[in-house]
Length: 373
Image 1 (cartoon, rainbow, N blue to C red):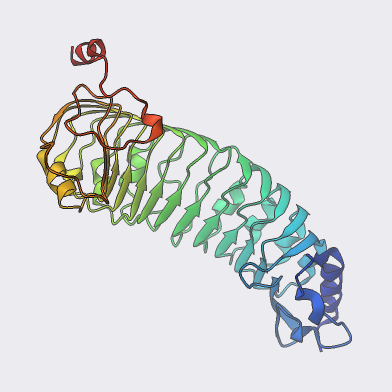
Image 2 (tube, one colour):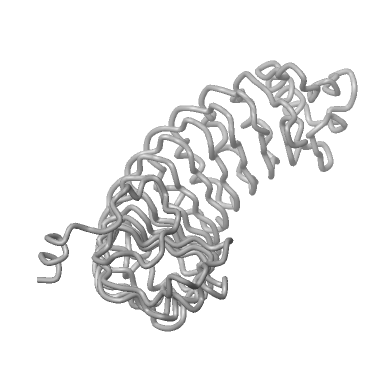
């Protein structure tokens, strides 16, 4: 038989939540039978060790109501998940009583209030996913001290304050995008084990060159739509990245990869980058360098890769480029996109550009003379 404390806790949790019309998750929750046979309830001996609330099938409606503080009575719980739905209210502080909890995923609901600092007491926690909710306040610094964390996903909330230092040596994913987080990032705020890092759509500032230089295992990096400044370290282009998103910041200086960049997608647009475009970027498949301060000739290797259709997108508009070796009679492959307008040259070919690029084909001569001087 189920432990009486767990039995009563499940009753309280059931009373606080209801199926959204079209969902039939709670149909099996008949307390005249064994709760270990309920949908989403998994037991070991007489204790509940996993609780997955809601029908996990994609597209099925979720639950509404709130999470009852009785969740803290399930003291043997190792896994707690809640499917997307319309659950509101705070995440109960009693969650800190679940000392065996390893996996906590409550995503795509309307949970509000602050993240309980007591989560920092869950020393075995590996995955923390509170994404797509309405959490406010700061990320508790106690969470950063958790030694076993591998995944922290707090994106699409209303979190503010600064980013704590995450000390787990096994952390591989940190996703904080779409919040109101501000301040600078500590040089060692994440360990070198990190592979996925997204801080986009926040209010972060300051240089990150020393931060990035040590994250050599990254395969995804998105720092876009912040206020980061300083230079972009050339070593980043040698990382095993599948995607590099640094657009819409305040990065300055030249872009100097240490060797041929093999990253499929690179977006450095809407910064203050300058100097000549490095030919080592020509091996990128989708490259956005627009709305910067690049100058000089476009290296011929870019034209070669564009014509052979290995470079799919090359956006260079709104810079101070002075020329490109492109024969106007040679057709550009249909699947490739090139935009050259609003530079210090007359584009040799007329190619479709984004509407945001404007209608002017070339930059005013006065601007080009002033910039060159």
